[in-house]
Amino acid sequence: MDATVIQGAMILLFIVGVLVYSVMLYNELVRLRNDNDRAWANIDVLLKQRHDEIPNLVETVKGYMQHEQQTLLAVTQARTASIAAASIRQKAQADLAMTGALRGLFAVAENYPQLKANENFLKLQTRISDLEERIADRREFFNDDVNTYNTRIGQIPYVFVASFMELKRRDMFQVSDEDRRLVEVKFQNQNAAGA
Image 1 (cartoon, one colour):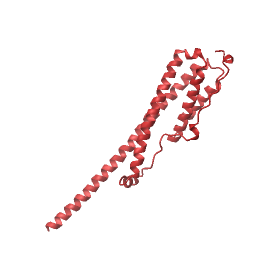
Image 2 (spheres, one colour):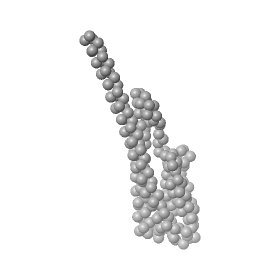
Image 3 (cartoon, one colour):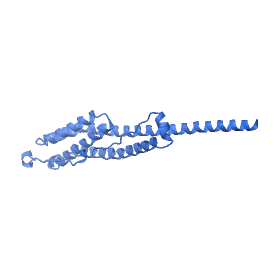
Image 4 (tube, rainbow, N blue to C red):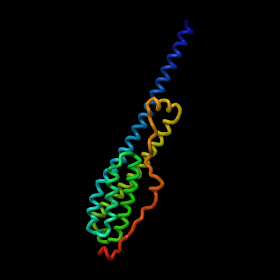
């Protein structure tokens, strides 16, 4: 009878141990999923802040860059595409287009000394540049979190709990090779611009 009680206690301890371990794995995966969501929310907030600054920037430069309508149009179209993007992949593509359009705008602005001296333009340029740096930092954090999550849900024993939770791999914030090409910037004749 003592052997039966000991065996029963061992089986009970084993079952309790497996359940506790499964709960720990489950909680770890929930934490990683929430870390991903938080990291993405941080990027989304910064993207929204950048979107909100674009109309101010375009209005500031309109009067100075009358002959650079293509540049202004590119910024406006990139903002529209960025706002309309829904998935992480779409937002990554739109973010790259926005970054390229802003670089083009700032490069063209170099041809307009009066614009470069405009205090409002300088503040907006600094603000947007700061946002660009913060977005790049947050992308790195997000991709680290996604990488950890994707690795974990593919590892044993997490893979069993992840399949029970129906967790799927998540996309990193990246762009396609086609969209990594350099943005072409064309300058208008400075004399025609009246600068």
